[in-house]
Image (cartoon, rainbow, N blue to C red; front, side, top):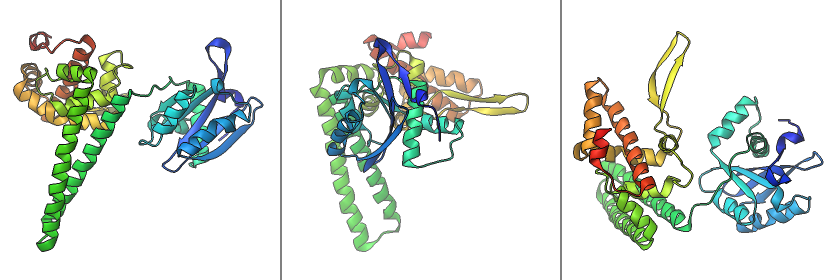
Length: 338
């Protein structure tokens, strides 16, 4: 991969020369690529630990890269990026966290043929310089803790499914062992659900928002907690952005006179939320008059069951977004009138 130094550096307001730094991060280490003012590209590998994070800025300062010049860009890789992004943000750096699919598509557009940590860091730096992505803002501490609780609950639920699958071919002492493990996992599930409820009740803002969300028939404690944890309402200005964020936007496949693919749901979004919306949508079609009206109209127009469910999922995002933005409870009569 090759590119000019001026593609890595760009101007921002206040006349400060920003230097794009690409960071390819993994569980144990992170690689950085920096283009200095003299045109040289620097590479360095650090441990993905607090000590490694604290070593990054002094290393850059020794090479005449000041904090107010840094625009650090990294991929949202699992949770590996969070500690480093938080550290750089608190240190005064401009930080951007990018969807890995965007970096992959950018590399394909550049006809990149290398796939190494060093090359990936350089590619991220190039993307940062050319696209100038928006600055990342860390979630509030109470939101981050809620995310951790929900992630742990997911992990426990997955272990429950694994143990239940093992029951089909188990007998004797093995079956008894599985039963003991399932008992412990069920206890842990209930404990985590109680912790989530307690955490939300402890924070008035979260509690009030969950109360608003639960005024929508079909939205329960779990879905409302997921929506509060993962949907960045402070960064989303329209409901279309929220729908796209979750990955429920329709994707058309039409080109010329020969390509006429069936419309599908674009799944480039938050898979956790999309999965969590499915069962509440089924429930809403039975207990929510507005959802029932939408479902009936779609069935009468010939839409299949899956299309109807996805449409209700999308509608529920509209309603949840609206009650949080307006700070008003759900009005089913208003929803029926639309």
